[in-house]
Length: 367
Image (cartoon, rainbow, N blue to C red; front, side, top):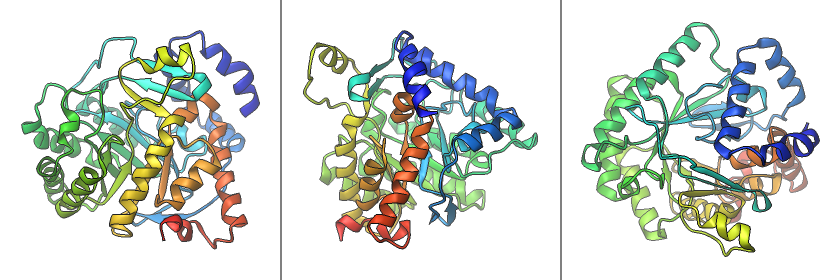
């Protein structure tokens, strides 16, 4: 299925606005997700190997999940496991509905497998998402895979009120996710990244922790960092989050930095405002994964995200300290076959390098 996508689908997407192409993909998958026969066909076509790993007390069939931002409103939850992902992260979701930033707000550079977005947490709001997910759950259509919810700060809320804003969204979605990712690092909500400071981090994590305690739950909370943080600031924030009860980290969100342009088209692309993801982000992501792992070691797991597009890039993230990994941009450029490509590549790496299992390889480069 990878070849037809590259030859037929991807070239046609070049003539469509990036956001329209994205919405078309998600809407198609949403329809497929509601059809059990279609799910079975997808399952047989996009079969992925088992590379079991236990993280956050849960068994994951393999480490690769879908990153936040692709299924923003949790429309197509049933489709992603059928495409081979072992877990899924929906969102970002905010307490209140948001239209996001003015269009156009999503751009792609095919030659570099890179995306820029300045979406601005466009989503129907936590209450509406809760209603949609409740219907799915009651209809017996909940995916048989770990589900994560990505939570962001509402644009209309200032940082002083942010802890309560996160906590309300966390509470509304509590029954509709296994894992929660607190997103304090999107570059597309004004002032949001200022939350990546010790006292703010503690307040946000503690506010969500109090909801979790009241709900008598043990659902893991992760903090998603910006790749643009200085190393000292990163480690300070990580320490503050750990002291407040965080259960893991996601490294990383998109970057506002830009690599040197190679030609006029890349110069025009990199001039767009917003967060850059895809291949150019990989080295920054690996650096942050390694810095976190060197400092926190095995205290809490790290989810690696940024430029994962092959067995090699996935292996790089795992050997530098990631227990789980995610991709997003590679789905745009390679289509669903990338899930099998990455996981099969990982299986081959484990066998070739003589590891007994995936867990043994986590952080191997840092020892």
